[in-house]
Length: 223
Image 1: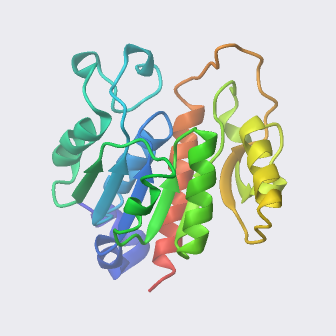
Image 2: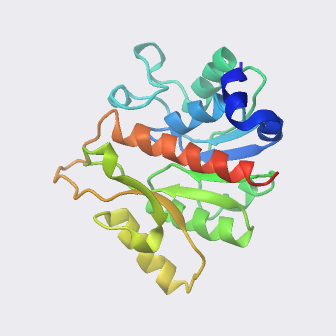
Image 3: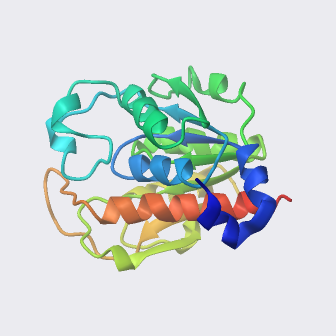
C-alpha cells in the first residue's frame, strides 16, 4: 500500500516500519496525526487518550461518527487502523496523563512523541520529560478560536505569538531554566474572542498533519 510513498523515500519505508511514535491526544489535532501516521507506514503507534467520543466532536475530529458516540477514542482508533493499515501495531493507553502516571509512558520504547492534547499541566510534564529522556518530539499549541490554517507554522516555542497556551509554556520554560529548543506547531493568527472556545474542521486538522510531517521527516533522518 505504500508504493506512492516509496517513490519519495525509497527503501526508507522499511525504516519507518521499525519506528514507534507515541501520540498523546486523539482530538481534532491528534486524530489527523494518527491517520497520517497510519498512512505513512509507521510500524507502531502508542495512542494515549482517556476520552470518549462526544457529539460536539463531529465537526472536527476524524474518529467521530454518529455511530460511535460514547465509545473510547483509542478503541475507535484501533478499528480505523484495522481498516487502513492492519500491519501497524497499536498500543492503547486509556489514561489522562498526570504527574502520578507520567513515568509509565516512558517504560515504552519511543522514537518520537507527538503532544496533541490541550491541557497546560500535561504539556508541561510532557515537554520536560521528553527533554530529560532525549526523545524527539513536537508539541502542538492551541488551535481553537482560529480560522486561518495558513497561519500555522513550525517554530520554536520562544517565537510563538497570539497563543495563551504558548505564553504560559514560555513562562514555565523560563521559570524551569530550560534552554533547549522546544519545537511546536503554532498559529500566528490573532484569536477570535469566543467563550467557550470555538473550533472548526480545518485548523486542527492542518496542525495534526504538520505534526506528522515533522515527525516523519525527523525519523527519516535517523537512517
